[in-house]
Length: 161
Ligand code: FES
Image (cartoon, rainbow, N blue to C red):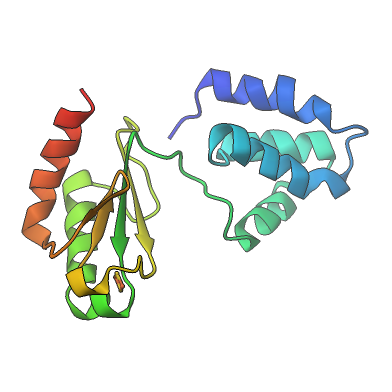
């Protein structure tokens, strides 16, 4: 996925110059600022960070991937989360996740190239009695199944028109 020019400009011209002097000790605050502004860390942006702070790209990547707070795909216009907590897992959550992957042609933690959908797995969302659960744009969908995925995609596309 190519990062839009505007996102790279924002990182290079607005975020990075705010950290002076450019030193590796600013790495985590820089990453947090990028995530706060863009809601993810674009790979090209991480390259710009490594050049700015004078660190290797591998070192920046190592730190960024160490912390679960950072995500590397932009959030989709429609955010889909599939619960794989114990109850949902037992009741078929994995098959639902696979169905989303198949229909959207992406893997978990990815975003479709048009940024319309992003897909994540989550731990228990606290509605185990309705398992298996998926969450589409913060709306809990209980007693879901792999075959309900197509309908949810259609609904999300219709709602966001
Ligand atoms: S395990 Fe999915 S809601 Fe609890």
